[in-house]
Image 1 (spheres, rainbow, N blue to C red):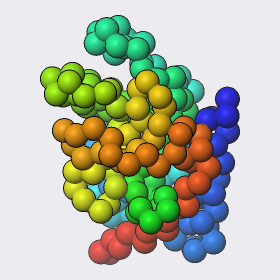
Image 2: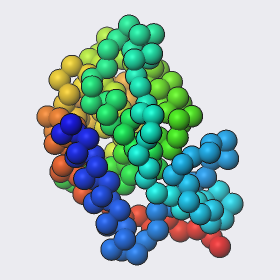
Image 3: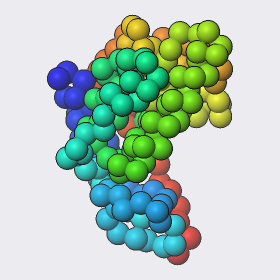
Length: 187
């Protein structure tokens, strides 16, 4: 339950940072999704959004069964607690983008991408990790959770983790700082 609490606390800090800066939460609208996070359509492909607790949490047991690979319990809590747009944050000197799922359909897309990641790790004979975000320093720098240890670290696509950021996802979230990004929309 500690991870769920830390995730909830980060969402609260995130919302507070945007409110204090008087910047709306904005993301691109996906026409094919009826995402519960969507609030107000602003223009064409842009919409204001708000995080929403998942009523039916995203489950990983079918994916784990299909891949014959159990997943670290933190992964299900991380992706199964909230619907949200991707979240901007900083960890130490690293500007990050935490991946989230907008809705159930997006959760299915996410799981397909995670399956591809797992299969790549197997093919390369590397320790299994699951991505949770991107580092903005480089297009192919992932934030990932080590499936065995739960360590959160950085890895380049196709490579093992090379820098450990935190020994657990809960500690990682506890030490994150929300970054307010004002997405400019041409009105």
